[in-house]
Structure formats: structure tokens, C-alpha cells
Length: 307
Image (cartoon, rainbow, N blue to C red; front, side, top):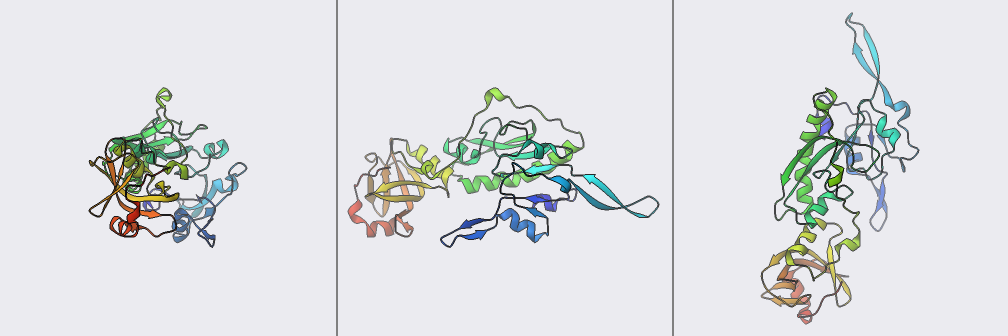
């Protein structure tokens, strides 16, 4: 939206992931990027793979121009810039190098920290209090290229992934547009990262959400913040998966790994204190509030949980 609304940007083509089957009926669903591009009548490509994909003749397009003599003419030019955000595939070198100014990427961390596929989730899971946005040029290595612009931001102690990612995305639009203008007009120079300080984050999976009650209440709460809404955090109760949909830390001390009901509250013991469960879902059941869950599962009070 930021690029579409910018008066100095002309979008020649949008390349996004192929439509994917979702739900039980496996109905094809377009990415939000594709939906927005269709609304604005933009050209769209959805290659299955980029290995043999070429921008090809689409690197050039005609722009109507008016000559000084007042005669209509046309200007044939090379596309100037690729802008890549959260694409999900390695970008081959031929695509990176095709435009005049190369390829710019937005990465939601203070590079070289948290290179990789899950920087926002990982910074929350690690309990960090600060993160940021890096506008960078892409090279052949992952999140390795030189920096055009970078800014740090404080993380609220209760930010979850959706909240923090939204905050960062809004700021990233401003930074991206400024960086593009200054870079293409030779007002800023790319600066190499300090690769000796690089750290890396991993691809998330369903198993990332398993709760270890040997950890502190804060560590489990940070895991919840980073993994909400997907893959979520979970444990097992009576050999059934128990998803903890909304939690908060508690100062109540309870035996580690045991579930405890008290005054319509659900508490689970951790390494130090406990976590309070505000909303949860037992395998085969609908999501429930703590009060509703207690009413239907009173025999579970004091039971040990497992992962």
C-alpha cells in the first residue's frame, strides 16, 4: 500500500507466492499481496520456483512522454529496483542483479542480529526489549547485504507477534520510501554489516510451541508472545493436546507442571511461579474461558501436564 500510494513509485510487476489450498476443502487462497495488486490492476506473476525464473523482457516497458517540441513520444527504460519483503524463497543472483539499483529488502531486526526467517517471533521468545527495522541491499547470502537505513524500537512487555509486526510494518513503510529516494539519488551509501556479530533465527514449526515447565513463567510467557497465533503454545492433558490460547504470568507458587483451579482461575506451575490461563482449548473441544473449562473438567484439578 505504501508503494502504491507513493507519488514517485511506479510498480511494474508484483511477484508473489502461488495460491495455496487451505482448510478442509483445500480451496485455493490468494496471498494478501495478490489481492491488493488485483484491486489496483497491477501485473502479477506467481512462479512456483525462482531457480529458472527470469524477469526477461518485462525488465523494459514503455512510458508515454512528451518531448520539448510538444510531440508525443515513448521512453524505453530498464526497471530500476526490486523491492523484496517476506517473500519466503531464496532470490537467485540473476534476479537480484537485474535492476539498475539492485534489490532492496526490509528485514524486521537490527541486523546483523536475528538473520533468518523468524526475526520478530524470535526476538519476543528471547525476551528482548528492543528490536528494529533494517533496509538493506540483497546479496547472495541470507540477510547479509549492506545496510541503507536502520532504526531501533522499544518492545512493549506485553507485545505479541501480531502487535509487534504491525508496529514494525507501519514504520518500515516510511523508512523504505525515504531510503529508496535517498539511495537512488546518491544521498546515502550502503554500509557493510559487522558479520562477526551475526546471530541467526530458525524456521518455526508446530513443535516450536511445546511448553517446557522447567522454564520460568516469564520465559513461557515470552514463548507465548512470540508464537501467537501460530504455531501457538501447547502441552498435553490426559494425553490430549491442550492449547494455551491466552496466558499471563502469575506470582502464585504451584508445583511445577501441575494444573490448579482456584476461584475460576487456571494456574500451571513453572520453574519459579506459575502462569495463569485465560483461554484454552483441549483437543476435540472448542476454545473455552478458564471458568467454562473448570466447569467441564473439575476432575483435572491437580493433574500433571506433559509435553
